[in-house]
Image: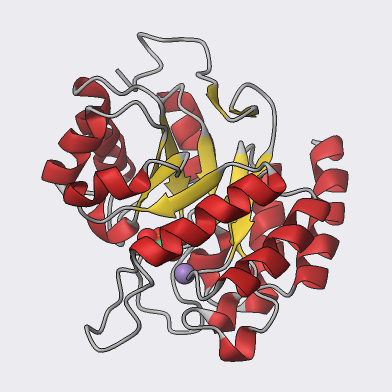
Amino acid sequence: KANRKFHPDDTVVEVGGVAFGGGSFQVMAGPCSVESEEQCMIIAEAAKKSGATVFRGGAFKPRTSPYAFQGMGKDGLDILAKVKREFGIPIVSEIMDARDLPLFEDIDILQVGARNMQNFTLLKELGKTDKPILLKRGLAATIDELLMAAEYIMANGNERVMLCERGIRSYDKRTRNVFDVSAIPVLRELTHLPIIADPSHATGYTRLVAPVAYAAAAAGADGLEVEVHHDPAHAASDGAQALLPEQFDEMMKRLALIRSAV
Ligand code: PEP
Ligand code: MN
């Protein structure tokens, strides 16, 4: 179902007035973790002003250590719903367990994180929902495995799937992951689904986020997911890769120039 061979035209995934795919470029921005209402309001206001069209925030966090901050859970989703009402902007947030689906009623896009890309039980359940799914490439997943994960969702009835390149695991410690820029044109050939890039988790460091975002835009991505925080030093997670609102604004301006050039 994801295969371009059988569906030559690009799929456009529309959500809350935002259209992914088909030539537009959408930027989903916000903190790694929802930490408080105040934090989300500050970041959402700035991100929207700079041109972000979707707000991101994690309420259920897939942390490496069980002793690390696990996210605010339902309270976090309630804050995201308030952001949506306040700024009229769709929300994307990660779901780790299909049993939480009732809590995600106000969330517009359900994110499947890299760690759950091959959680087939979760994928099948999300295939029975009618919400767009942002499916992130697994930590060490091949492009074909990513496409087959999308099939799990689509085969169960939900064809509103977006794919996200977020870097794959390698041996080099200088970057958190290795961003596979070639995955963008390869996916473009193989599938009609929208292709998103996440330069934040791909690199792990603030100073590397914008260059990778520019590369993704130049390579033809349909949009980005980017972490933004107004106080990265005190972020509950992923502070080292967060952009300050002013850095995000600068990146958005340059992205517009790059997009007009390609
Ligand atoms: C995230 O987007 O919050 C996240 C945890 O990303 P990934 O699943 O790509 O690591
Ligand atoms: Mn993060």
